[in-house]
Amino acid sequence: MSYDVTDVGKLCVRNIEQLDRVSNNIANVTTSGFKTEHLYYYISQTPKPGSDQVPVHTPLLSIDYSQGAIQKTGNPLDVAIHGDGFFAVQTRGDIVYTRKGDFTVTSDGKLVTSSGEEVMGDGGAIVITGSKVKINDQGVVEVDGVEVGRLKVVAFDDKKALVKQGAGLFKDPGSARMKAVENPVILSGHLEVSNVQATKEMIDMIDLQRSFETYQKVILTMQDMDKLSTSRVGRLTA
Image 1 (tube, rainbow, N blue to C red):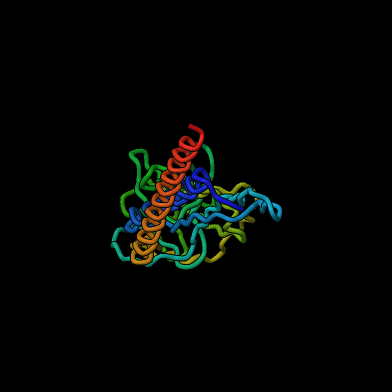
Image 2 (cartoon, rainbow, N blue to C red):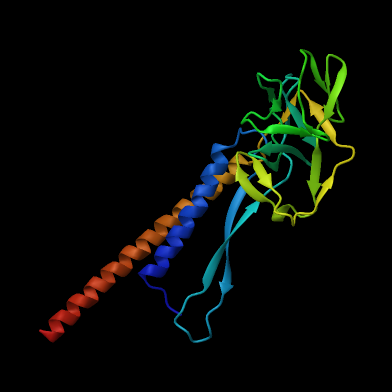
């Protein structure tokens, strides 16, 4: 098995894609509910013994769904889930799921996320028709002392099956095995922050940058060797 400039170039591309993920993690270190992402490559096709072909690598995106730290904000519309679970929200007619709990109220009274998705309750979208809002530790939403809904919190047996939608949203393609969380622990006036470990991500970034520089040097060396070989062949045939 031997590598040429094209093969090393593919290593560079994979390295850049991994670096992009690490950079995105670092950029979202203060983003509420953000989950760390890592891109790996596994060998999906092994060449036959004695073959000059190189292994085929397939990308695999891994998302760390572990809980981030809980910070107090004092805002009654900020809520965090302690433990397993996701808030159900609606965007463009689809139900998706998020750990981001920085909610707000629209001019027509709908409870929505900071990016505009409607927050779902057990009976549908939650509408606020008063001034004093309270969300208790079971997710019950009260307005001026009257219950108007209960936050819909669900969990999944297979989180790896969830499909990332961007902006901290995830979609169940139907294989994540969703289940209701009967007694969620909701912390009002708090937010779950990103679970990104900044120090680890910085170390990973440095390692990836060094690998990329090494690949670049290898490509330049191989190109110089090709030029030298071509030049020598030219002299021999002259």
